Image (cartoon, rainbow, N blue to C red; front, side, top):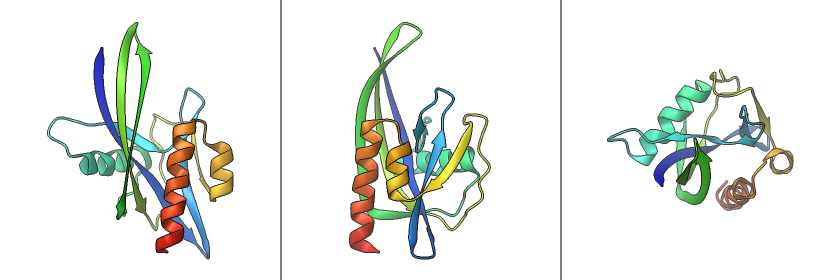
Length: 139
């Protein structure tokens, strides 16, 4: 079994009085947050920052301190089982226009309700709900 750790970001921005979340469309067809594999000698925060820059071109992210959510899942890759752990942080940006990488097909900034409808996986929906709950308390 392969053990793999990734880090990602639930990225949001404010537009007037609305909070909008960034979702990326992956080639497999699902909608999810920015995330990617940790590289050697990186911290989870460093991975999240690097992946955000690589996948969106966004460099102005500010992490909220009270948010660190881990998910675990397994999948098959070339006939081998991969045990994946992913940590998600919550961060704000002021950037609206993004440059998606070759790893994605599209992106959308969506309010919570639309993001919940568009997000594919239940674990992502759960993380989005936790992010919204924290934002409702702190903003």
